[in-house]
Each structure stands twice: as C-alpha cells, then as structure tokens.
Amino acid sequence: MLNVAVLMGRFVADPELRQTPSGVSVTSFTLAVDRSYVKPGTERQADFIDIVAWRSTAEFVCKYFRKGQLAAVQGSIQTRTYTDKNGIKRKAFEIVADNVHFAESKRSADASVNAARSSSPAKQSASNEAPDKEQQPAPAYTNGNTDDFEEIPSDDDLPF
Image 1 (cartoon, rainbow, N blue to C red):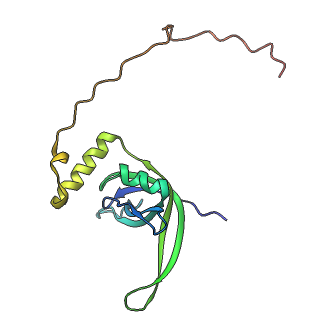
Image 2 (cartoon, rainbow, N blue to C red; image 1 turned 30 degrees about the vertical axis):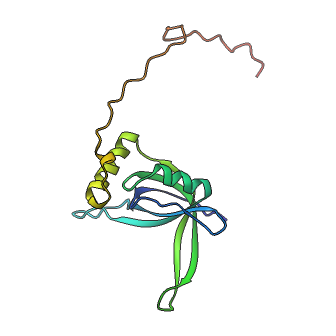
Image 3 (cartoon, one colour; image 1 turned 180 degrees about the vertical axis):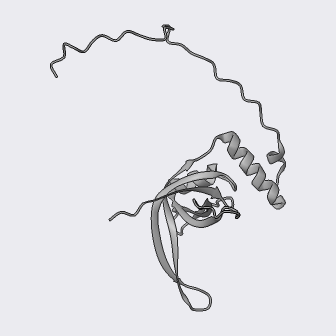
C-alpha cells in the first residue's frame, strides 16, 4: 500500500510547540495550498490542509517557521474520528509530516513573514521592524588551476 502526501503552501499561523503527557513534542499547523486550476475571471482558490508533526520534526518547525512562510511537507494522510460538543461523530483528515522543508529563500521568507505580520498588527514587535542587514557577496575561491577545460584521457583501451 502507498500513502504518501507531498504539498507546498504557506503557514496560516505561527506553529506552537506542545508536549504530550509523556513528554513527546508535537505541533499542529495549517498550510494554505493553492489549487492548480484557476477558472477564467476568478481568483486562485486555496485549500487549508491540517498537518501534525511529532518529535524533532515538530521542534524544527516551531523553531524555524512563522506565519506566511512557504514550506514543502512530505508525509502521509491520516484519518481519525472524534465526537464533537453536540455528540455528533466526526471524521478528520490530516497530514502527518515526516519532513518539512524550506521552500523559499531566507530573504523571500522574511518578506513573507513581515507581510503576514503587518496583516495582523496584534503580533508585531520591535524586533520585526528592524531593517535587514545588507548581505555581503561570498568570496570567490579557486583550486589553483584556472583553465576552463581539462583534457580527459581516452577510454578506448578499457575492456568493457
């Protein structure tokens, strides 16, 4: 059987790390995932996918991701049933994340997070308003030989 889910979307809110009674780290978060098809004359629709991450994956997500950031998630689909407040039995579908990856550059992510923060003024802080430090270009290194092309010996005498 195959149960694999791979999706890319933006965090709807900052993830929050929790602990189970036995001390296992867990976080639940939602990604807004754009649909691939757009009807002419309409805006692109998005699906809001619930995701659960456990242990070190949960800790990684909570440490490095914020609202508005683009992430790629690999995991599996899980269903669970529960009874709501009115006594009605419900079924929930969610992705259990095995891996969560950055899906944009740090500069793009910072811009996305700042845009998301400005849309919810209650969570702004002075540290988010500091201007970005200008990045210095990486130094260029060489291995000594600066020839563009190197002559490769012929493989004609190989027995296979």
